[in-house]
Image (tube, rainbow, N blue to C red):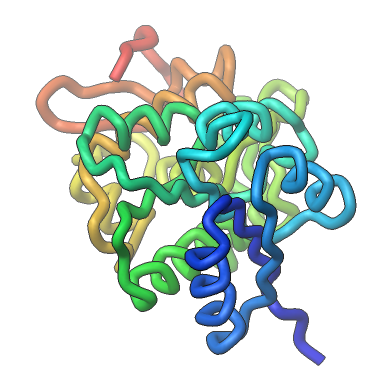
Length: 235
């Protein structure tokens, strides 16, 4: 029997959580509800979910604090996080992405939008099927085992950064605009702003450490991955 994708809903409003859970069950997901950070941590300690739906405003630790905490933990770092927020302004959205969220959904949202976003992050989390290993200089990405290494040392990257790095490495030395990267990495994932690309490029560079210099900014054009970086340029 096929295992249903497990979705941890971290939401203090029971009516909203139950509505989300019902829709998830009807569409082939296995939802688990936690009303605050403490109960969510207990669920994570027991069984890791495939996706976390994380409300911004929570009692105790906020969604932003929890996202940062889980991104800093090697065990929970790979889990995609979707931030649920009533804050629709771009600075707030960027703050959520900077905290470690892979995407955000502004309340109120439709069931179809929620499902589309969950499926999109699950697709980005899945290892690439085309090609098993890509090597640029001393940077190696193994899509079959979902591993990245530089100079023989393992590097941990999040699901969206993995997908972004895979695309850049398989199309190295070319300049890709933000719009092109959105199309190729996020695919049919609508409602995403180009600023999102900058946030994930920054996160990718930080994860790569010394190899982050290989991801270059081409002013006014976009980004490229090169085997011979001139210097690290900030997004």
